[in-house]
Length: 179
Image (cartoon, rainbow, N blue to C red; front, side, top):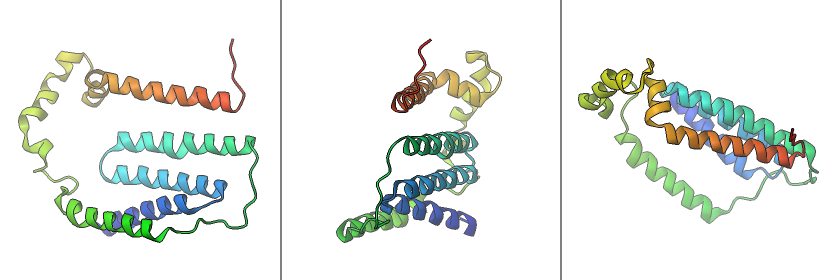
């Protein structure tokens, strides 16, 4: 991995930890938005632009905006201490788990763009989607066909979750419109 990838991973981890440690809700929301934006950039670096756009739109955009609107509509308690105290045994356990993941899992991951990754090393699966997607779905774009046809129930489930979150937010903000 490049120095950029390591710096980006460090940024994502640092903002995740900061989000968990801030007691001030506004600070936590702002740092959470930065975390989501960092994840979107990381997904782009890992060549997953569809996931990156979703993370940027939902995570960094809509969720941050809804959380800021919610905090604006509610009372915000004043706190003298802006950060939470660190629970040392918990931090040691989480640190050991992250170290284990970094030493065991990361070396087993394939490099970005490597041609001997499982998706390319199994030409039957790859060629199936390339050759038969249009015949089976009628959709010319293979990525759209996979999302809309092959993963239709999953995509529908995600749409239902986003719709439910929007309705819940309207109810919380007391701006529901029933026409």
